[in-house]
Image (cartoon, rainbow, N blue to C red; front, side):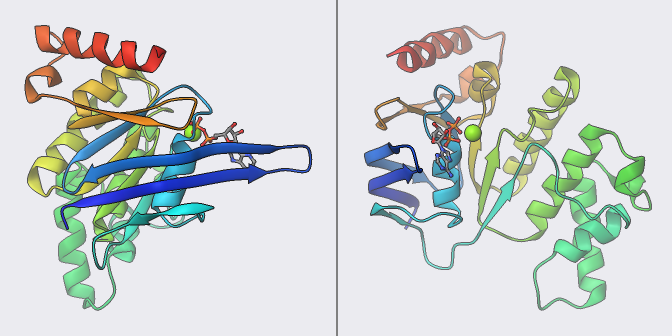
Length: 237
Ligand SMILES: Nc1ncnc2c1ncn2[C@@H]1O[C@H](COP(=O)(O)OP(=O)(O)O)[C@@H](O)[C@H]1O
Ligand SMILES: [Mg+2]
């Protein structure tokens, strides 16, 4: 199966005061090996959908059909790291089970290179900038070998230069070894630069998928401007 299928998904939050239907009948196909951005107004259900995709929450109806043996890892705006140990250990401890210590180290070094942290192997998170910490969190997520990476505004806490570097880094990683990535962002420009497709989630819990041509990934291209208008128009509906 080359896609994740979200079929007739329902999610209702019940609090003491009220019942809130987030999704009544959400249908969405998320292709594997691609980067899909979830966009939409605050509160439309993006984090809810990520949690459902990752199995951190259960639907109230419908289903999410994943390919066989699919595992997911969540990446949050605040990186989740082991604060007291080195970059090398942070990554090797995240590597999947069944590896010898030497194999773990080899894999960790490869990932350090991939995210541009090769010169930092003995540093601990306390000695690192926020951009370096987020790259380390990305390396740890990649080390898990999860086929599905769920990213909830992963670059939101970074300054704009570091954010642009992280976007490039993630696209580079995605070129080297593509995974299925579902990425939430509030930044329209970031969405278009990164995405193979953008799922706009509306307030009524429906979603529209817009595919992004590679020519739109360059911010100074005419295709970028056209795409931006199209996504904006869909978000405003
Ligand atoms: N555990 C919960 N219990 C009750 N309501 C929730 C819970 N989680 C989220 N919500 C509500 O569901 C809506 C969608 O939330 P969320 O998925 O976080 O939106 P988004 O990530 O798109 O901003 C919001 O109105 C939010 O307040
Ligand atoms: Mg959210």
